[in-house]
Length: 358
Image 1 (cartoon, helix red, strand yellow):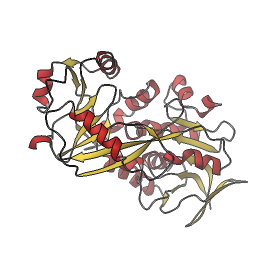
Image 2 (cartoon, one colour):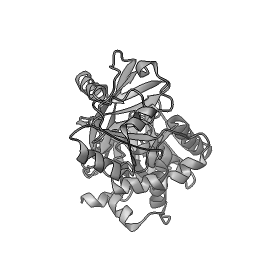
Image 3 (cartoon, helix red, strand yellow):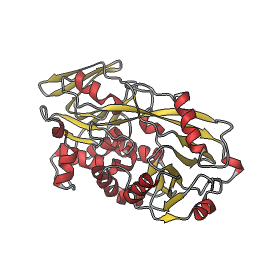
């Protein structure tokens, strides 16, 4: 007996969709790797900043707020700080308007983050409307919900071929064949290759590498309550994590889908940009890694049935917004797939529809 809903991809998009759809029918989820969230979802900066992104992304992220706030221990206070130097006024003002951050004095910023360099930092802004997300708690919560409703998760199940059948789809993997009436493409960086395998026209998704380094707490400071910091224009960012600091060059280098790793030169250049803002040089890396942030051509998520084949559903292009938008995105996907009235504006549905690329 085949599934009603056959999901390819075990990141946060696929797992959250599995949870939502498990209330409406039999769900089978296929993940190519040995564990869930192996790629982008497992390498996220894990921040809920609902004003981060283009307007449709912001709408989804804001709509996810009630879910986040209702789940105990899911969010913890972090805050956000934007920093600018001489000559960066336009970029600084754009960022603080976009994310609704009030400007503060450099002295006030240094009172919060004492390593900021007063000789280079000329402007600062800060707000509290950003929270750390316990991404494992969120992912496992969705997984438990799905499995409690009978969903089946299959790991090491990389799609080798996909065929259309009289009743839906058959996906052949090394662990067996799986069938389903509706195929949900939540394959992250691999969404276009999965579509091609299924005979569906790809939409032009582009995976982009983003590198990260974990460094010791600068100058031995307690970084626990420091906000996440961005160089204006997102030229770098830094975020406290388990007593250390994660620093990223915030690069977006186009790459083919793969198991990403940090580029040493890009990482060094990004750390140098970060160092220009602080008084403590980076003398040692604890670790480094990279993830792929996959965007559609207009950098907005794609949520909807394929224009040519409504039994093929796109849940793709999460970019850097997958975790913070997943409660609303997964609910919208489930509503559209099951024919429920979506709690979304017509303008948002149009902005997310794959038909916009037709």
